[in-house]
Amino acid sequence: MPAATAESAAVAGELHPPRAGVASLDNAIGHQNMQQLIQLRWFAVVGQVATILVVHYGFEIRLPLDHMLQVLACLALFNMVSLLRSRSHRRVTNGELFLALLVDVATLTAQLYLSGGATNPFVFLFLLQVTLGAVLLKAWSTWTMVVITSICFAGLALFSRPLALPLDHDRGLWSPYIQGMLVCFALNAALLVIFITRISRNLRARDARLADLRQRASEEEHIVRMGLLASGAAHELGTPLATLAVILGDWRRLPHFSSDPELLTEVAEMELQIQRCKSIVSGILLSAGEARGESSEETTVSTFLDDLVEEWRTTRPVEDFEYDNRFGRDLPMVSDSALKQMICNVLDNALEASPHWLRLEAAHDADALTITVTDAGPGFLPAILKEFGKPYQSSKGRAGGGLGLFLVVNVARTVGGRVAAANRPEGGAIVKITLPLAAIVLEEEETEVDDDADDEEALAASQQDHRNGRQ
Image 1 (cartoon, helix red, strand yellow):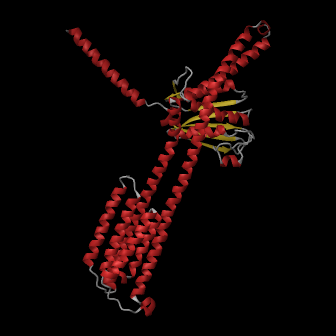
Image 2 (tube, one colour):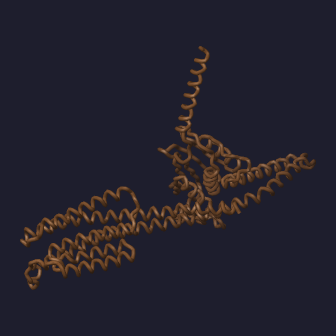
Image 3 (cartoon, helix red, strand yellow):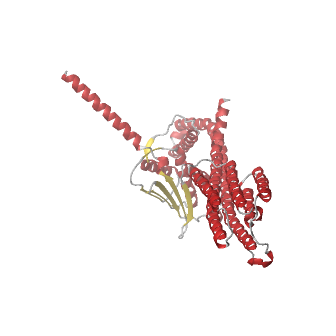
């Protein structure tokens, strides 16, 4: 029962990061939408100042400038507070967006009340607030916005005083009221196009990122299932491999084997391959946290690569293998079986495509380790390159093909790295693995601090001994 619980917790732990990513993504979209509202509010402040001045001094329609400018000052102050809060990186909820739109509706209602109420041609700006609510808010919030704006419109018709405008609608565009309606329509249309387009782009980006997170969660779940199957198979293979090793040891001592050098050579080769199988099984169990007596060893990047290449070269039938380790500065790291298996998978695929020539190059690129594997085979098909790293994308034509590169890409991604593949112009393929050093090397600062502390303790002890000697 405890094992099952631990296994379920491990699987759940694999699936939690995508859920956290979804929450972080929603939070980012909320911040972007709030930024859009803040920008729109600055447009509203500038536009209202310009409109009030033009109407008051240009059309000579007297407006209560003091009160209207006070309302604009309150709106600008609220916008600055919203801007400062948005920079605190706190979560933006539906309630906050709803409150922000309600403040916009309240200030618009106050300005219309002071400038003609329902007879003001800019009364149709209420539709802008409702439209933004329909895009940004949840359903209940949007319908609440519809009710509130309708009540505000009705209240303006009941309690505000109309503007002293002549009823000259028959003059067409020469009528001040028609001109105001035209400006209101153009303003509504322009703002809707600009900001709805931006908000829709944010939502599309959110949906695309969400689809990517779901795909990643599905792939990680697939990896978990494969890991459980591999761990179970490793447990089952341990006993028959040990039995085969014992049998081969007995064969080596039999007279008709010991007297035939050719048979002894074949037995030795079989023992070598069984030992390799046992090492693979041990690596699987070690990755699953169930080591068979082995443990991770501290090494360096160059030593890790050199040992990996040496082991791979001696266990594969490679004819011409070039290895160039240009990493330069050697850094401490822990020998990781997952990284080792990842690089070996790339080499195995390259060897299968190009058994006559193969090259591996390691280099120190900025703050990353780059491993480049080059072969002289037929290269990748365009469809494989397009879906590189996806499971079961292979040109080998056998069941389970493509899982090697799928695991390579996902192992690299877990440490913040990436894998890229391309075809060479002269023929063959090239696969480049980039791993951030921060994720694979050991921290040197802690060691240095510990060494300094040890030195200080040793110095203090020496001084104390010296004082004791003098006494």
